Each structure stands twice: as structure tokens, then as C-alpha cells.
Length: 116
Length: 108
Image (cartoon, rainbow over the protein chains, first blue to last red):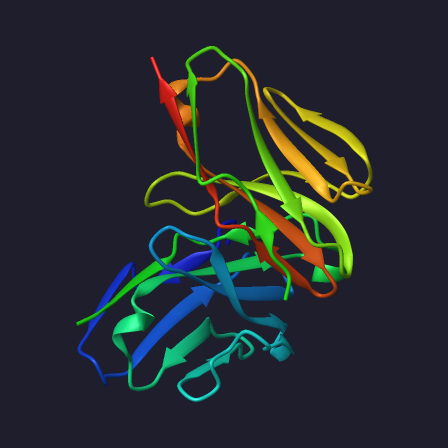
């Protein structure tokens, strides 16, 4: 599609439950990025993909967070055993080119995760 | 680690000009981008500077000085719809690192 699509728009989970978020990048974009934004503040980089391969995962809390981008499927971000501090808006972005030559990332509308 | 500094809030009057500053750390620096985010919305790209100087796109301009590790976003002829948060983002090594954002309030 012509826009980055993210589902669901809102997600509510009890502490300790699993949360799974989905992202469909713009058709033809090879790079996908996940960010976490807490309380409208800065965007914390989580992970990036080049097609189905992890490009950079230095921002991922490895213990509970995982992500995949499989061929012909939306990308996903999964949080096992959610904690209160995971409450945030999770944005997915896609780009045509890698960060080393990047000018613009196109962001999806975000998924608001609330952990109770 | 990398960090960017920008004011948390700026207030300006409709029709006026406002400048939002951003300073960054230089390790691995490639360029500076600006994004706009309205409440509840997705960030949208405004501009990118890799070289020193001014880039103009309509009412919005962005400036970079690599020697000063400094850039700014200039918004002219402010409109009420420009009320939003503005983020500078540094492209450093293989990453895009965002500042904490500047909330722009516009008074009628």
C-alpha cells in the first residue's frame, strides 16, 4: 500500500500478558523500523529490518521483546509478559533506503499499548 | 550515547516566525532531520540537512551548522494548524536518533 499500516490501533493488556503488534510497510520499502514513544516524548529506537533480516537490534530489550518480518506477512513486534512501563505508543516506519543513506522515514499511525 | 537537545516548549503568535533549535552530538553524524507530530498522530517528515546551510520548503526552512553541531527549524507565517510537536532527529552511523521534541503553542 501507499501508507504504513499498523494494527491494532489500541491494545490493552494486564501485566504479565503477551502483546503482539503488527505493521505492514509501504509496498517496495525494504527497511522497517520500530520505535517506542512514551508520554509523547522522544522516540526510542527498538529494532530495524532489511527485508526479513534484522538490520539493527541494539535498542531491543532482549528479555521480553521480539520482532519478525517474514516474507508476504506483516511485520510483528511481540512483548512477552508485559510490564506497566511498556505502556506507550509503538510506531512502525518504513523506508526505501537504509539508514546510512536515509533521508525520510514514513511512519504508521501507531499502536497505543496500555498495560494495566 | 547520542543525545539531542531541543527546547521542550515554544510559544508564538499566529502569523509570526518561530525558530526551534537543536544541538546534537557529533559522533558518527551524517545529517539532521525534522519531523512534525500532531497530537495522536504519526510523525511526518519535514526536512533533512546533510550539509551546512539553509534548506527551504514552503513556509518551513531548516538550517545546519556542522562546525557548531547545531541546527534549527524555522516556521514562517505561522498558522494555527502548525500547533504540534517538532522533533529533530540525528542520523548517526546506522541509526536515526530522535530528540525529545519541542511543543509549539500558537496564540491567535
